[in-house]
Length: 172
Image (cartoon, rainbow, N blue to C red; front, side, top):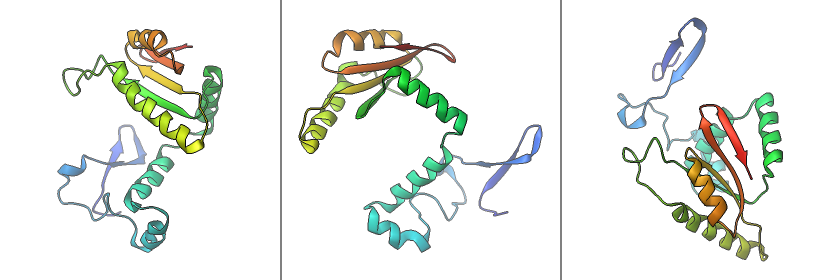
């Protein structure tokens, strides 16, 4: 077992190894492989396909770690179909209850939409045609969804907001 990684055992299951990944800024001693490091034997090939090879590498790594297992993939596919989820789409997560005043500043929905509008304007120029402006709005505050439905008249809105933990309402 490498000595530069911290392996911990899970409570009640000694057969499972978990790699603990603490905040990078506080690792002492610093392990030899952290972003922005990439495998040296792959670096020249990655550099040919991406201007920022370390970003590509981390993206590939995270895509693998976070891949959906078949039952979850089927659930997501069904939910997307029910919501009318179509591309291109801009996803917006508007947090209100747990971050405002502690870790984040309040931002009005219209501030988020400026960036969504910019994205669609650029995509329309790239594709040379008007696009349906699909927007997925997620929030822990039901009033954000109400505001989106009332005010985002130039966007096709798809939304979900949580009412209780693990209890979601789909809104069109």
